[in-house]
Image 1 (cartoon, rainbow, N blue to C red):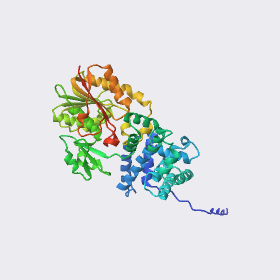
Image 2: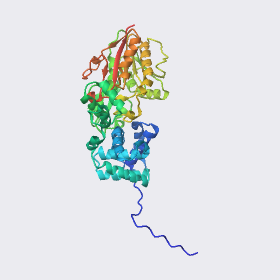
Image 3: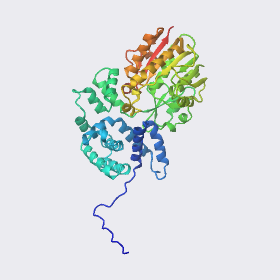
Image 4: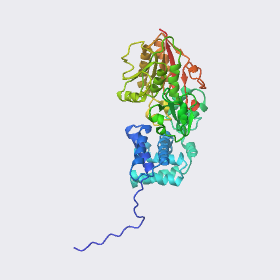
Length: 475
């Protein structure tokens, strides 16, 4: 058989295999995990970074690469609402009809164009190359076309185009400009009160990268020891707090590795300190953390209790979270016990404790700096699901404390339905309890409002938006 002549190659560029960019590929994998598995970026990103450093052929994946990957993931998640509005203006179909992986690549590209100093050409070409790797050549062309449209203007120009005027719809304007769902903007505005300046500052603070804050656990570590670390400065309000400058790695701190110190927002530290310092009538021997997981406040309370010879019972409903509490408390110098128990159906007898903390489950709207994806997952109806649990935990906490003892009701949400409404409703139905003024128990902390409860704010105090109410049982 005669050999067939070869078909002549069509003219044009020869096929080029797409180049894998480990930084952008990692960022894409993190976003897909957040979208597909409802994962949290702060949980999924560290193992991906560790894997990238250890992977054969990725020896050059260094601290700068890790920083860029982290910025791409968190920046894209924080500004998702804004970027969705921009992308929607550049495509000829509703966003819900764009495949989620394509939308993730587009969002990463838009963040590089509008939210970083990466040059325009590099942002577009790197994003198109990522699309070729994870989506294929066909959809990469779509990504290229959309990003070239986005690149025609800067962020301010796009906001002027896609955000409705403030005078026509203030909440929708703020939602697009500051990348929060409209209902969250409304709820935060109600909680904050005041005019436009305060809510804009709060929403902007939610989009800032939070500082890493450490806590020196009393009797086990000192703040001076932590201040000996590179780029460490004293906290603003808590006598046990130390802040790490940008790029500071908690895992590199010996006291953190040994459990003598931990990572804990200063607002959470202040809640524990306020309960520990609240005035009591009578003995001070038994403390309870009724919602102890994952263990940060329990570890600080346990250390403070140990200094006074008091016993801490740390209770957490979920067994795997009670394991985290036990790990956080391991090595505590004083007596303590960790149990898995439901705080709404407690195994302890009424009136057993002198001090009780209930840091109740909530929507987490006060920690959007740390978990930016939470703002897109939460819905207004979630409040109805948390309400009975929050009230039940506070009611049982008031039964658990003895007459003359104090309960701290805390939550990492400023939503009025999770804060003052819960406390007011429970106290209205339960005689024999009174609110204490919590403000004097946060010495040096400014702008604490009219009291007697306390609401902290990211834009005012540099903390998560923690809420605290102190209640004394009187009968």
